[in-house]
Length: 181
Image (cartoon, rainbow, N blue to C red; front, top):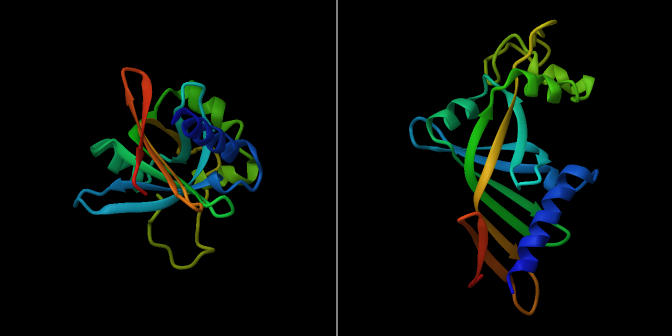
């Protein structure tokens, strides 16, 4: 009975990648910093693989990379304001390091977006003003974070009853359980 909600979540996540303007394109990603403080940021969902792994692109020098290397558990929070649909994904992140695979994906990045991965200074470094960013010509710090979900929570706000379902992956299968919203 819960399968339809898992399927809907998967479809909406895929639309976030493929449909221009879909609100799931941008998601909030949570990690934990070295002090144990939650760290949140908006990232772009770039791919949902056939085996249901979620991929985002980032600069390999970003804080989230260091945080994930210390603790690979992460959460992504998606919200669709028109459908009043929230999807929360928790899983384990890995960093893609294969240079051939990274180059294949980097070559598909829009030229205007490639500069995001070619700054001389790491993301978060202090600069004197927004125009003081230096870009490298032949070096990039492009990398991919791949999240293997272990838990997904579906929340549909609607009347007369909200629908909330928690899904856990066990032995390669997703098992759902309705929750009190």
